[in-house]
Image 1: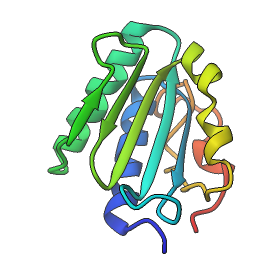
Image 2: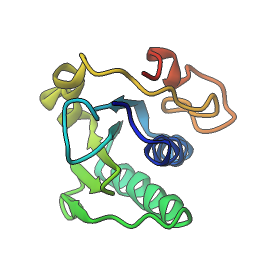
Image 3: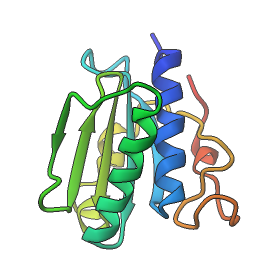
Image 4: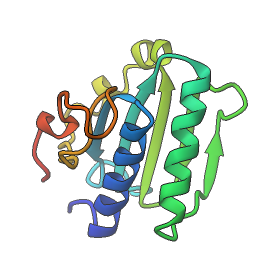
Length: 140
């Protein structure tokens, strides 16, 4: 079982939105074989609370344009780790310190990554060059 086309589309949209707001270390995992509650995780981080909130706002706006509404939001008030649950995907936007401390990549490293659009850069904004988040693995 792999992530649905809808989930992959939402992952790409969320990743582009995060990239456009200069999120860092953007990666997506297909967790559909490990979890029954969602198909994919998107992980990204930002260097400060204000940037975390800006990334979250952009992701929500872009996903709303795709008729996706979060079923649950957690952590927005603190701005250190915001979780957006869309059912098909779960987006984690973390402050850099939380990203290092909780190391979600270590937990999900056995899951296949989902290729992200080439326009997704890690911390450099769309169209400004830099490493693509999609170079980390292939979609299962």
